[in-house]
Length: 374
Length: 169
Image 1 (tube, rainbow over the protein chains, first blue to last red):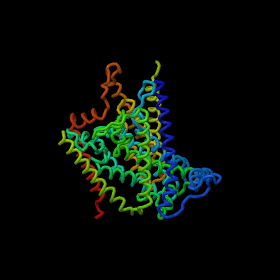
Image 2: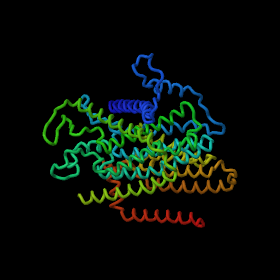
Image 3: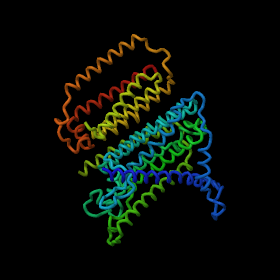
Image 4: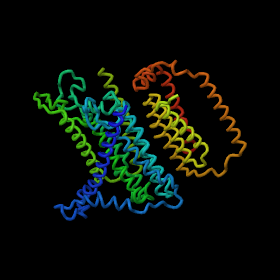
């Protein structure tokens, strides 16, 4: 039992550090990226002793700003529920980080005759675990809004809970169609299944279409759109930022938060962006798979073979996973700074009258196709 | 008797579950009562995991803690329910206490009579609690009762909407 616990602890620590660093790095990408989009210079102060040739603002967004936020006064308004006001930011950030336990970062590696899967917890109900834990994050929003004793915060909290519950339905149904397509709830098994060629995966018999990898996007494009939209809605960012829309509700549910706790709420939004990217990558874009890269190296369907050492293959796959995740993080930031905010009725109509029926139809069509193929 | 780690977790989780269940009915503020219920539901989910029923455990968290209790909180906050201004009279408390005692005794008697020693259960099937086993039980072995239950729930939902909209238009 001993070494397993040690290995699990190391894996958990490494994954947590990767996610934390990626999340913090996104703060800088967002500041600089938004400046690029809006034709501004953006963060540009405090270079390291004037040593860097160009001033990217990485120091003031990643060091000066956090130091400033965490040394500010931690203000609790009069009449607030002190206990829940204190607990809410943690309730909103913990579930997101816990979720990464089920995300596979790479294939299994051999260490001292022991095969270690590059995934913290090898649960056979991985997707259900993620859905269940993400659904807990809504308590942070609701309780923050209620405990602040502020009308705007309260409205933001109510909007947040209504929005997250509405989009969780579409998200759950989108996941159901993916579970049916792969025949498993385990994310590592899904990533592994996407290593085959598309023709082989769909069971065409002859190797047709094998020049395409069996990535989820090719046989479930609708589920991708549904899950991506629902995922952005869950992360409560523009165009779905009704719970915190600053022109109507000041800052919505975290209006009455300052300093470190406000930073925690912001941080949980960014962690959710990373989570959505990781899930989209794992289910629709091959996870850690690189097309045609098997355990021994590249094997192309049109002939040709490039042998590679095992360790290099694993490192390349983990790198590919992180690159894909980063691409979707960047894509979400691009969406956030491009689209305007929905009206509340538009938000509800999109969730209940567009995404939910589409997801239901997708589940129906997927199951009929699977039945016919059998 | 030396307790395994499973038993230690069971007793801790069980104690927290019972304590938070008391919190639900004893705390004067409805928001805290709802939160105590969330804690209790979580502990029950852990008990399901101890029983190798991971699927049921996560469904429990997803459906009850993640959706139904959020709606409870939503309603409590929307109606802005504060502390109950008029506490129930002492006679009511006595009646509910008595009824609760009767229910508890009944359940205890039932479980003591029906309890099976662990040795009599024998080895558990390794597929027990898996998605496949659960799906087979629900949709093959008990398909008819499953469908009847879902229709019953649908009827209840439609009825609630009809009653709720009466007099609106």
